[in-house]
Image 1 (cartoon, rainbow, N blue to C red):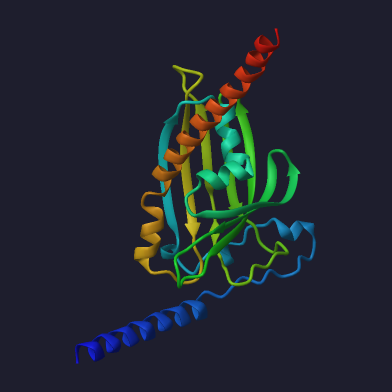
Image 2: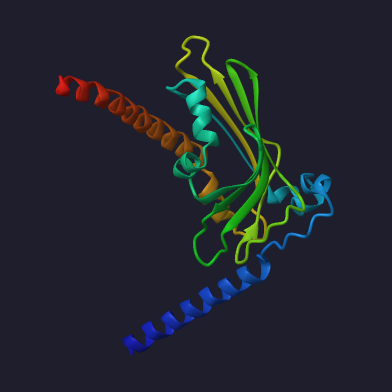
Length: 234
């Protein structure tokens, strides 16, 4: 009797999970990018496609001081491999089109837990050097970019930025201010969105500090190696 009861609950759980998976797949339709009619159409953000209501959007704002010069911090926010390593949930990142060192179209793929479909975003990333002690990176979704990702749902990013400022007291310290407006697209339960966004900025800052420390240690190690080799040959 006890075994039959366990089998009953196992089957009920399986039916429930399959139901969620089917519902999520039905609501979360992958984005099929239309063919652009011209270059001027590719890079326009369309408010009509950025969500059904304000409730679809999640805003994250945070600030931290990083023990590194502004140029090095900017490198970690613009280099593809470094960005993947430090950004929570980011599985893949590609530059789809590069106009200059400060202006490009990026693709980001974020991993979600089963049974929900992964998300991807296509957006224009610009880096503006306002002054020697200030760098602004802006991110806005683009419309009609000729790209399709099967099995994933297209999310959106709008009016988002990363502001880097050299500390007035110490040029080797950088204040990082992050503002993200994200629409994950499709349907996701609020608890899942909360789970992914509540500590996102703090985890990113933690990873950034650790990665920069590792980078500086490795650089210092490589600088010492030639000097030690020269002494050995003498």
